[in-house]
Amino acid sequence: MTTHSTDQLTQLLQTLESISKQLNDALILEKSVLETPDNQQLLDVSAIKKERVSSLESHTKATHLFLKNRGVNKGLYGLQALISTLTPKDKKTLVSELWLNIQSLSDANKKLNDVNGSIIELNRRYTQRSLDVLRGQVGGSHSTYGADGQSMKSKISRNLSIA
Image (cartoon, rainbow, N blue to C red):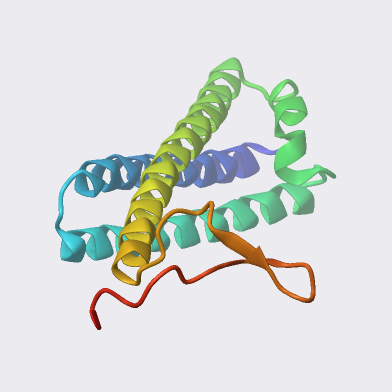
């Protein structure tokens, strides 16, 4: 890989690292907003998160294609092997550190997103149970089976809003 190509790769990886940090910040903000009742702020953070994820996807694809066009058959998956062949040593060290930071941020972002998704799912279940109570459907254990063998919730009483 030429010095110019190594510089281009470094710029691409720096961009990926920057976007990954921005996504990490958005996920941390999302977690704190999930602990408040402010729906508008949650919608705003969700829009930011969506934009960061989209940007990260497009830059990842661009980096992958750049590597494939430079003869790295596996693209990003072959980056570690490419790093071992880079010279001079300072370029090799910089690219290696950037790649490790990107992988670390990727792992952290996945964990944060999983936590936030769990919080959202718990809130959804709580809301669904509350709506079921208001509709007169108490508990998930009251199910009946239809002719097709599928389980369905049975209505125990009239809708609370009608009663």
